[in-house]
Image (cartoon, rainbow, N blue to C red; front, side):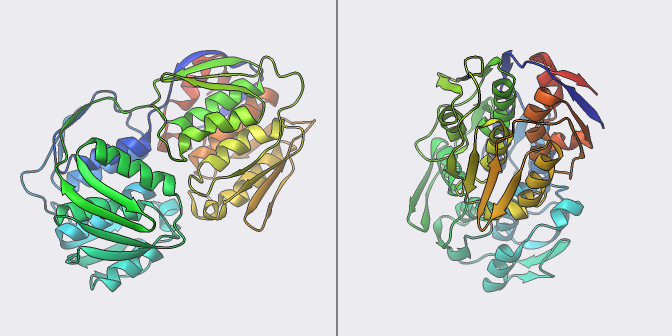
Length: 413
């Protein structure tokens, strides 16, 4: 699908796109208790998580998830398409149940590394066919005190929390460095709220029992996905209320983008469950900042969407893991910004973006990376843009382009 963006002012009120991070974690709890999600948006990653729990016996009727009578592998093959999150959570859960199964994905997912989980499986005497997808795994996790490298993905640790719960509790030792700690903390928060007793101290995460309670409600909105609506409004000197978010926790996470945009000189404030942003009172340029996103690397793309509108160099550190996302984001961010006349470069483990006085109309082909397509929205509504393969946003937010039209975005689909 091709999308053409025309200069527009983004203003009004919009409901925050659903948090796939929270949605996927909730869906995996349906393995243990009844779950009803009243507002579920079927993004590609959410569909992958539904296929994952279906493979373990969960039934889904479009709103309600029915836990299985018995936890076991009901199929020996699961295709995760492009969802690395779901794949990485599923593998530890499946080996805790035990059996033989094959996992695969699309071309994008096949490129992403699996070395940490493959090493973990082999260390625990579980047979694994290779170090990349498609992957056939056979065996059962029998140890309740386990170790795993923390450098590749926090999602393995989330999967191991569910796995150890199946085994009656245990301990995860995460070998440093530990990346994306914000998402480990998100898992802990969600499962604690549902009744699980977890403790995360240093590099040790203890699963100490409890019973996961049934849940009926909504999946809250997502701060990082909402940030592209917010950045579009700020860049075009509009104003916007984004409603349906959640109370910010006390760890560094997606919600910190509200404060980051404020530090850049925009009006950006959270009140109750709504995020209010405005660029109306910005006289000239936004302010460049330095920010470390190691705990939540996805925020690098959000910051990159607004950095071109600053008066100097924005430096984003802790970005090493961007090279192993849906695309090599260290490369694609630089390439895409250059199409709009914005200079940026990678220096060691930093991404540096220089604000531009001459943002150009740009045209590009989305590299099957939803956040890269979303990053273009503020630039496109400022100067114009043409995006091929724009339906790549379906991975996390299939309503993205239609939502932007509701708040003033002039878009040709």
